[in-house]
Amino acid sequence: MSKEFTQDEINSIVWKACDSFRGAVDPSEYKNYILTMLFLKYLTDLWKDKRDEYTKKYKGEKKRIERALARERFALPPKCDFDTLYENREAADIGDRINKALQKIEDANKAKLENVFRNIDFNSEAALGQTKDRNRRLKNLLEDFYGSDARPLDLRPSHLSNRDVIGDCYEYLIEKFAAGAGKKAGEFYTPKEVSMLLAKLVDPQPGDTICDPACGSGSLLIRTAKEIQEADGSPSRNFSLFGQESNGSTWALSRMNMFLHEMDSARIEWCDTITNPRLVEDDQLMKFNVVVANPPFSLDKWGAETADTDQYKRFWRGIPPKSKGDFAFITHMIETALAGEGRVGVIVPHGVLFRGGSEGLIRQKLVDENLLDVVVGLPAGLFFGTGIPAAILVFRKDKKKRNVMFIDASREFVDAKNRSYLGEDHIAKIVKTYKRRKSVDKYAYVADFAEIEENDFNLNIPRYVDTFEEEEEVDVRAVQKEIDGLEKELAAVQKEMTGYLKELGL
Image 1 (cartoon, one colour):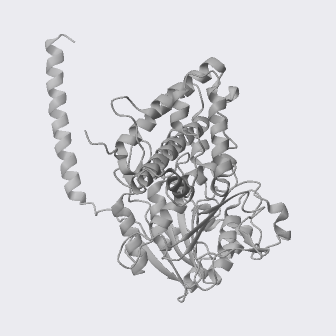
Image 2 (cartoon, rainbow, N blue to C red):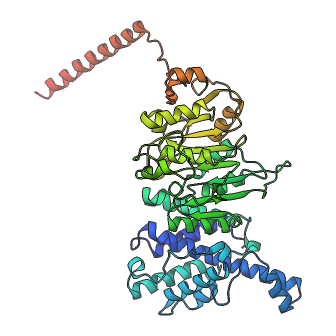
Image 3 (cartoon, rainbow, N blue to C red):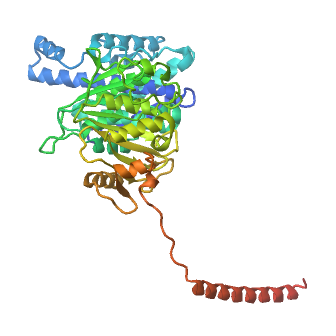
């Protein structure tokens, strides 16, 4: 058997570890324990790989080995590793031991992991049950991540089939939790194919700064970064990532997610983007080449009461209604995109395209400023926790022509058991159509400013993309002939039935 662990093998092992919690702990709670344990196991095995590498390189010279390890991108304090916890899995205070190990790891890596484990308590009676049940669950969890004696789980990079296996496993788990737990767990996850489509539409380039002001678990940021290629087609590491997330537990997931994808230099802030933006320099909002987000749909109580006194003057186009924060996020994103070159990609509910009032006025100004570049209508059922259809809006600050492209991609998708999803061919078609920027019958339309103005700046896609399918012309004579034939057949059957009934004396 190969010593290398494949993506599917690791995914299966880690998903099975969830059995330690299923039925006893809510998925929105136990996801934190599973993902944190995966993180700890990876740190442990990565550290062992680095130690083995330097031991071989420096022929066992301890001082040189320790100096080399001290220069690594993270530190693992003594006896804070997974292996030590596994050896003590029968301990009565195992929950407390895990907590202390995580705290020491945080302290040793403040720049990258400070506060990441603050919101998770492996010794919590409320979350994991009374002592006996809690200890049993934690023992099972440690044993699950150990694997088997015949094939212990080994997450060392030298034993993995590719460098992104662990990060992709993390993404796999987040998606599984979102799919299984409904809206509560799905709020922070954008399906990977939607992230891929949005990333391709904003077209990130080497050297770009990329921001997600509602970054959730960080999947959209990571996917956008992965789209960047060097001139020779190789993946680029020449980018800078920034994000902000209001939910503390989800913010912690994002920090760990970045680390597992070797993007731990990303700056991810924990606070509400609209009421307290933290990506600020010299009392000014930071500006980025690319801004992407899947913000909460029509968020109520988003902060309208303080918008007119916003110190960054983001809402000069108008203040969105207090019960629908969609344009609050859109406005923030546009204000943080670099002048003359910034690209903004945002996922929104369809109401953003046509609702009136203050939203209509803001929409009109965005079109009038020639910022809106494309509206892409997506199929219903793509997102976890909601079946409503959504759209992608792309704004560009380098537009020349005063027009807007509309793409109706709502009818082309893969109909899976639990939800719809976009296939690679669907994504490729959307991106190709966008880049060609030409109308396509019943699929895409390029509308000039005058036409949008004539429609009172209503961006509802059916106003621009005609998807009406004419019914085939009915041959009345042929249909009548078919009816006559059926009537004759029916009369014959009735006559036959009458004969049978007479024979039966009925």
